[in-house]
Image 1: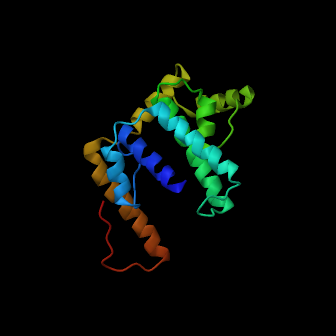
Image 2: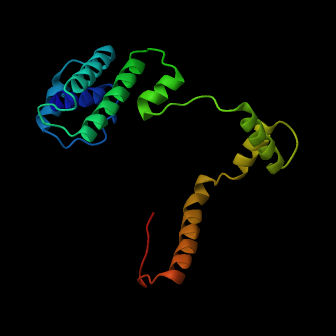
Length: 179
């Protein structure tokens, strides 16, 4: 089961390079996947679904005698992988379903009065006239640091933080941070 899970993840990496950001398992598995024909997203979705069913059917215990927490962790990953594969296959997945699959949370529309109140407070806080969306965008543009000024801004911010920390905690005299 766990070997199939690793192979599944490595096959995703063939569709979307970088999907697997670290793999410390058996290098032979990576070579095996690299030598296979390109994976088909719908097949990956089915494999994720089958592995999740197998995991649930095993009552959380597979050949490796997984703990309940580890089984839940794998089941959540398999749900997310199945959703990703369905998206890669071109399937239209609703936002609420996608959030549930990726993050294991339920979202729902909130109270529109709460949103209206937040918009009123934001409109009061943002200067100027005109539509709120335009004023918010103008505010965001005004806070952008041009790329050429970013290194100096980061250094100044870091220096100010260092001074505040030094007031409370002893720092080595030669302490430096490089960004």
